[in-house]
Length: 189
Image 1 (cartoon, rainbow, N blue to C red):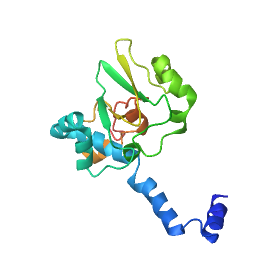
Image 2 (cartoon, rainbow, N blue to C red):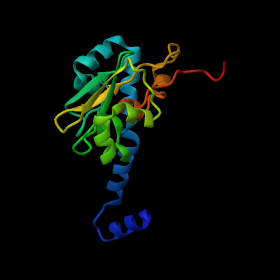
Image 3 (cartoon, rainbow, N blue to C red):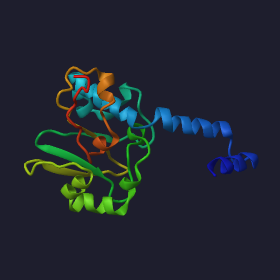
């Protein structure tokens, strides 16, 4: 169906197929969670970059080549043993597209937007994230003026991994704050 619709739009001159291909390529390869994962992994292995990222996120992120619409005015929230950050947009679906790609459907849903604020621990549990009662959950409301990226805690037992290997462990959901990254285990041991 999509191909038929595309053919019809191209045939009528409403869409240029090269422009459409470029748009799809952009969202598949240039914009997406792999960008945010690169930022997170770099922060884990480079303490100077981590400090820069927390103090001046836009500059640090731009130094890796990531910027663009919906990526400006960003704050990085660091998860620790005592604090877990959760991002929601209660009004619509404000989201750092250059770092995380297109927002997932659940992020835009009314139940998530309402419940993340009123019962964040229950929402996290529904995502399989069980935090101790000693962990303070901080909920951040993303807006057009300020977007957020969660810097998840580095997985335990990942000290021997390279930045590229660490990048593969980072998930979109961990950068929103709905999940934590699991303990790394090398299955070849």
